[in-house]
Amino acid sequence: NVSIKIEKADMKKIKFITMVLVCVLLMTSGCGKDAKKAKENILECTSSATQGVLTIELKYTITYQGDYVQKEVSVNKITATKDVDLNAYKNTLEAEYERYKDIKYYDNKIKIEKNTITSTRTIDYSKIDTDKLLSAGSEYYELITDGKVKLSALKDLYTKIGMTCKKK
Image: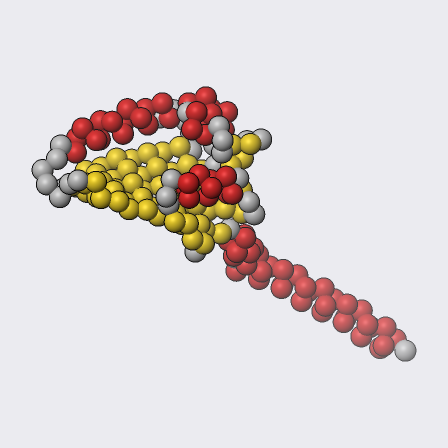
């Protein structure tokens, strides 16, 4: 009778230790991180057009959870087939993005390589102060509601301007 009580107590300890080990393994193996990533989805919107000696390529990668945008990386490329002063385009883009330069989590980089100018804009909507973003640019008024950007609103805007959007 005494040995049965001891065996039951030992089994409870073994079960408890096993549960603790499993929990530790799950936490250290990064399973929680993978579960978070599984909830993040990606929508990619693209477009290209040729106007005279210029080819314009747009690629917008949108990370979202549910119907809310978390982050957007927009890459705009303008490639000239003939000699064109790309610095004029660069100056125009820099002037356009000047009003956003002091907003944290809004970043824009512009570079010229050979006959191509590339503008890469990154906005982390999950962290950005949307009130500052709204005060800097009226183009965000239709996208931001209650401090968040709805995926459906962003996708509608991009498809209206001729972009093709696909889930990745």
